[in-house]
Image (cartoon, rainbow, N blue to C red; front, side, top):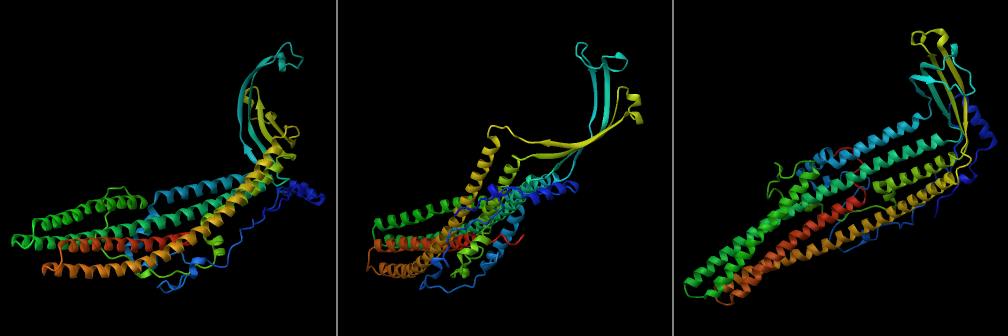
Length: 491
């Protein structure tokens, strides 16, 4: 639903006009033309998130405070907490956002300064020659050419009869609030990126550990095959297949190391450090923080309106765009400015600062843009269209937020279900490897069965490590989409 439009009927009443004239004496704004801000109507939201009510998923509920902004502490990982703390202080994107806030705060001050008289102190000196043929009074002593010197103060004070300045202050204040929410949004994304990259590194470390363990197992199997081949029990084919199996696993390690190094570089940049520097994470330190893998209680969709910074920013953008309409409407109305100056003027600099050189003037200045060929009217229409665009962006931000939360929740639930099944696969495959190797040594099965079992084990273990990481990725995404991480100034 469109917000109400009031500026057509927002002209000042006679009483308000009288107050506006009375404000001349004290310099306060009179009335404010243009529409007063009306909260845009958000899309209809359901009472709860659909995926939060999925049952029989094999997990218990974890109490989750929707107002908590320190979700990373649930992971109970001191290294992750240290990384998040460092990134909040050192990340360059965060620092840039702080400077944008400083810029908006300064611009708000510029808008507020228009309430007060603007005073200048000009100093001029000029040489003038009057025209002999122009019908004008010649200068003293019939001198048609002379120097003129002046020095003093001049002041302009716009009386905000129609709230043009007040609406501009409203817009600048809303834009400042929007910049704060931009910072919060950047921080939410940053903390999620840091946590995601850290978990990715831990997953890669686990996959490296798994690859090395399987390489050790396959090397032991190769030793057994070589001994049996030397004893003439098996042929050369078994040894070649065992050597091939070892080589394949060995070849899988360099890509994992490469991917880990790239992730470390990415983490360095998130921390505001130079990639390739001294930053390292000890390989094999700790395990994936799987204790947090419980079902979250995300609260109600309507809470996104107050928690997600991108939605809050869109709201303040609507407020700023609404105020800009008032500025455009006021531009069509008369402007009243009090002008005054006091100065010393003389043709001889030696007598410039004497009593006879003193000059002053004061009086109102009236300006009304009457004939502008529709420029000001079209400007109002443009501001109205910009406001409607901001309302649509606000509505879209809400729908996008709900969609992201729903998607993150369903991803979390399904990945958890997949991980439970992969754990069963790893357990069964481990048993298959042990049984097949023992039967091979007893000449009950061919070596192909051993190879299949070991390859299946390596694949299953790698898939399980990846799936566990995917659960954590989905959990981090859930916290991010719920707007977590922006409420505290520091971790």
